[in-house]
Picture 1: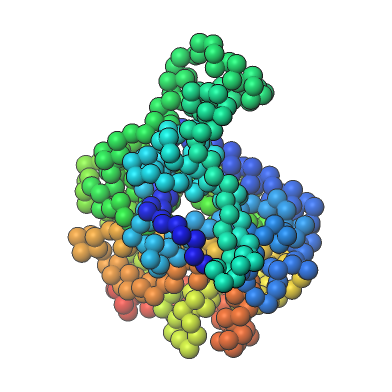
Picture 2: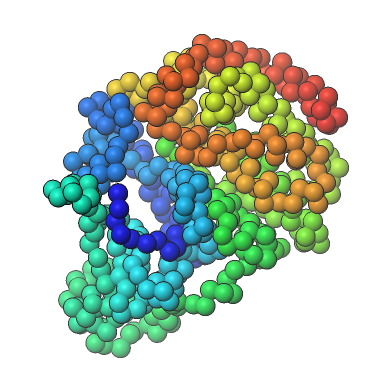
Length: 505
């Protein structure tokens, strides 16, 4: 579909300031409340009948913006897909837009505003804050929600037309008879009970709190961004497509070394809120990520104290911080465990690949993720998923009612696959030759064929299609995932590790 539009920049947040912490925690808690409401309303599961979500083919581009394709009633109020941004980044990295896509070392808003003011054009966004920036007299903002694609009756020209509501910010301010939208937005935020006309009248009066007004102005000021590229000095590069959370993690560590706690806000998973968070099953893999980054930091800033990682995620019915301590590389025992963990992860991955070498890598990694999830249940003496739940996670044949057990297992698989993606990106960032760590190159080689997240986490429609095409043998997979004893599994891993890396676990 030709729209006669030219894209010059695609920006993603790569680091959010500390003052956004209450907002981020509030959003995570709001998502949890929404999920609890949905489970309370639909305790047996989510019904998907009479929906395109169980149709035989994916949506077309026109249907994406067609309001008649509404969500099933059971999905109303469901939190947004947790890995939408990373999946979009993976897809963009494989298109002609890769060269203009950036995960910036800061908030994307300012980068969008500056590029538009300097170069001219329109900002396509879902963030209404963009209306407040001074982007120039002839430039405009367009919202995703205002986009619409419809079929053109004159099919001799184009098959479809893209329509959008355009907001030229200077003209909007002129029509509202205000000098700019910045002061208007300040009064609306300071007192949300004000009507638009009341806020306009208040603009005629002196600002009561000059310090708050100054802070508000600074938040929306278009700064010189040349000095913000601290990412370049730590080896990320402004053109990098690091996962936003990994980017933020690294930027915190190197932009302000020695400051102690480094915060990471894990994506909100759509799991069963009455059970332990689905993030627990990938804790072992995430620990390796933090150890890798800490080891990298130690090679640059050996005299500084080891950072503490603070993960924010669901625990029970609350979103709370959990402290994760990276292993100190100077401790021989910690060093030994660090090496052992890397070998263990490599072995488990290669074992899954070797046993299912005839199927695609996407299914190999999903099988690994299923086995890691099942392993977590066994190790923690919890009732593991049933055979009935494992099958749809591999085939996409979910039926018209998706039970919460299935939803939770799928979230656990997603958490493992996302953690593997972060490990791969982390290994690509660090300079492995300088670290001198056993097994790191082996792990990097093992993860070389990890597919993009958009392929690892297909929709149920796509997964069903892929499984049917590859004639996935579910009984064989279920047996591999389920039929092992905890002690035997550990001894198997340990013996293989000793043979490969001579690491005493």
